[in-house]
Length: 127
Image 1 (cartoon, helix red, strand yellow):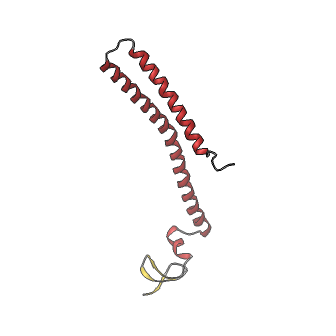
Image 2 (cartoon, one colour; image 1 turned 60 degrees about the vertical axis):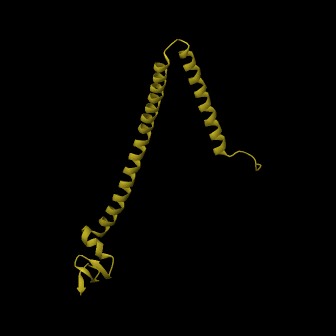
Image 3 (tube, one colour; image 1 turned 180 degrees about the horizontal axis):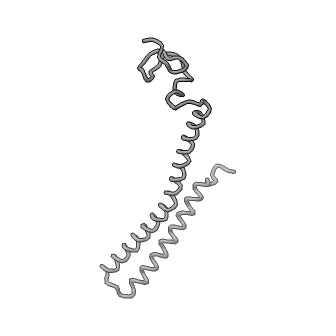
């Protein structure tokens, strides 16, 4: 591999550029052929922009149909990963969510009764 060899991104960009130029040439041929029919310029330009707008709307709708489900699946996976890790820690302790907060830590902390020294059971010892 030499220093001047194009990267993958460069090759993909060039390929995408060629594809876009082919589509634009086909579009130009189509509009030139339609323009020779004798349609007035104002109607012709309006039709041209409406077709382009419709193409953009179709592409946006298609991409939303692909992107929205992917984002939804990622959100569900995130929610499930957050909820299962919390449930697993509560199942092993055999206690309520409030009590499990204090069972693992002993010392000075802010708890349900304010700041102070809490024992392993979550009870405040002194002020």
